[in-house]
Amino acid sequence: MHALAEKTTTLDLGERLMNVGLLTRPQLDLARREQRLRSHQLSKVVVDLGLVDPENVADFLANQAATERVHLSKLVLDPAVVDVVPRGLSREHRLLPIDRNNGSLTLAMSDPYDIRAIDRVRQITGLELRIVAATEQDILDQLDRLDAHAENIQESIDQIIANREQDARVYGPPSSELVEARDAEESDAPTVALVGQIIKRAVERGASDIHFEPEARLMRIRFRIDGVLQPDVLIPRAV
Image (cartoon, rainbow, N blue to C red; front, side, top):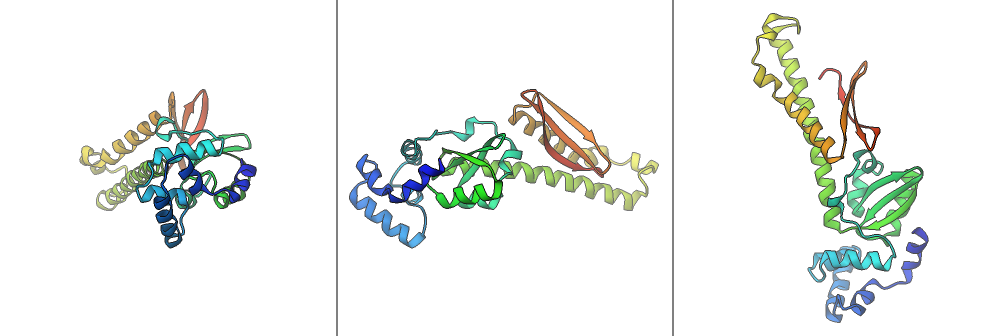
């Protein structure tokens, strides 16, 4: 796919969009003027201006690049795979790692012709890349969803630790009878929320079961997916 992307420097995406009837000449001229002001990819500009439907752009780019068109909302994404690429890079270039198989990484991109992004991901991961096409909004929606889950889990962990520290200050050591008599509903709420978030995450990843594995300094959470245990969440032992 990288070799194909290298050839596209000679291609005029705007002319091709016009040739297949997705843009008119005045629209293309407008998009090019806006592109010079924004320094964005033309494929993004025509969508931002509302000139071409994003689904049509994604279909067109997939066809031009002779690559697969994917709908990310229909996939079960592994956060460990997504995190192979730094989140800032994923958001900057509107891309999302969706599968890893041995030395190959499948990368969904809103612009399969973004050579700079392809080079950066290859340098960071050291993996061979298989490029597929998705809409920018689809990619951003998935990144937002994954980030929200991670933030919710971290918030629950932070709240549990804060509650434990407050109990220690007010009631003394954990063995104190006063600790046992504290309001269980209030203190356990973050724990219940954390467990619920982990279960939701497991369901979304298609896990058949969840393994809670206590270690010296942390609790390791692993999901069994397609018969294979895969790491997911690390929880501090204090929780």
